[in-house]
Length: 424
Image (cartoon, rainbow, N blue to C red; front, side):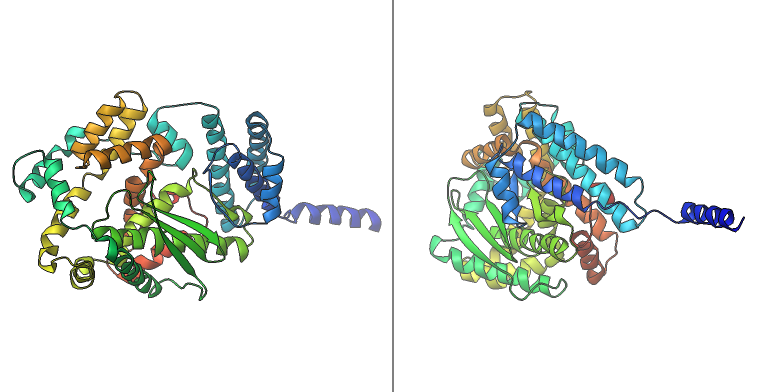
């Protein structure tokens, strides 16, 4: 009888004892290895990797076909879905949900590598986890009318804006000094709110023949290479834009914190950064919004007028009017998405896309052609800048007017698994 009671008691205790939570680390490792293999089928798919070097070597030495990778990704997604049912800890649940969307994005990218195409907005949602708002181009006509009053004169408005832009070009022999000073100020302001490792650093390079204007290649170990495309001359406002977006608190800082999640938390999925993933709108959006966060109110105008304009040999007295024009032009950002959608969905041809870019982005023909090249190369990735910026701005500014609170909200995106849907 005592033996029977003991057996029954043991069974009851076993039934009441919670099972250990599933270990998703092996699943995260498989995601990283699969991502590296996908990268062998698409140049540029892996934007950064700082995990075990042998994983990359193995992926490149024996990559599976896209068909085999699709089957492997589907199996991984199913296993993770099953494991997530038994995750109880909030942090693990959030990590599991984030990894699930990363895997879904990778799966769809494999379809695209094989030639699959869906409508622009659907493509963006499948890759980046957020659906862009697309407004008709006529919605931007009132903004163009307002800009007409800021740049009066004859000829096409785009030509007048381009002429105004050309009056603020940084001379080649002052580029390095101006960009160095701008990035240093972006760094100083970021460090006042976000801790960074003492050994963090970047190298800046000036390059040509690119479809983008600036790029950050995070190298791991708290280091980045920041490249500036000099195909088209840089106007004075580009210095702060690039300093914040590519550097502080943008991509360089994002890379540092992603690597920290990998090395300190042991979350191996953060050892790889595919270009096409739900991280896109967070990274690009935070890069763009980082300018307003680091330079609230009129602080950017004051810094450019008092520091950068003299360094570039420009007249500080014109900084106010230049700033007003730039703020008005920024309101046209959404037009980029509509033009990209029309072109990539086959509603207009390449020449028409360039024409509309000239009109609604107020770009020269050369700048418009560069933008079309970018849309052709990166497709729906273009949504990440303005849609991502709107998402980050709304989330951060819900913290209130206090700047410290806004920086804490911004930092929270860097320090935990985060999807675009978590910020909505």
